[in-house]
Image 1: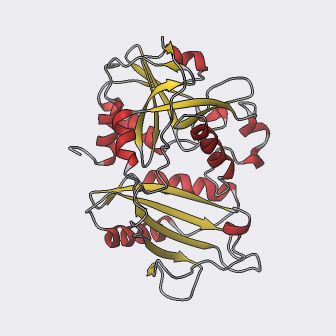
Image 2 (image 1 turned 45 degrees about the vertical axis):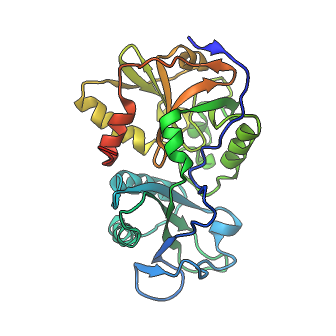
Length: 314
């Protein structure tokens, strides 16, 4: 069980920002739509790509995925492409084929190289409001230096009510709660609220108090030698990192259960983590004013995830 403590000044875990403002290196690859030319192709990163009325910009009408490039290799692209396909279908978008996306991913990874880790985004927009083809492109940017600190030191989180019932995915499918859409303003507002109040990140709960997910992450706990995480049926995004972790854990003889959790389960757990595609694993050290146990839970979740994404020895 955790112990109560006061709030401390938080440090943002936003993997989308670099700590060095001068590091503006970017790679952009056009996969579909946009200016005329071959597909896929590298687009100059300092030149415009989208039309002013592209529905990604004016309505957030599209979907995306974020992948880690580590050692010049893109981590778990098949899992991300499968989830992107599900998101696109939920939005009635067609999008490039997996083969077309993969050709763009390979090109972007080659352009980025292996000298430093990169954050690779796949973006699919409905296209211009005036009509025309869907827009699909890829960007690669540096991973924030602070991510290494978060991986090593862990985070403090606050619990926020998302305001939806746990069954909202079934009762109101038009809310797209299980899709990774470009409409991310609410998630980013939640993170800003957390940081302003001395925390690093957020764990959402349903209107009934069930544990859901983070704005950009999946909740995983260790309990009695097993791992557990909320099921997708509670209206959350199916985590690609959790899927990869589950495979490696199974090969190591560690059970990963999908079950409904309450905040009390987190406080009583042997350990709690937020997993995601770029940060990978961040151990939760504090939930609101309760400090969590620091003992080794006996399950090397970080090591398993590193193996799953090809970061062994890093």
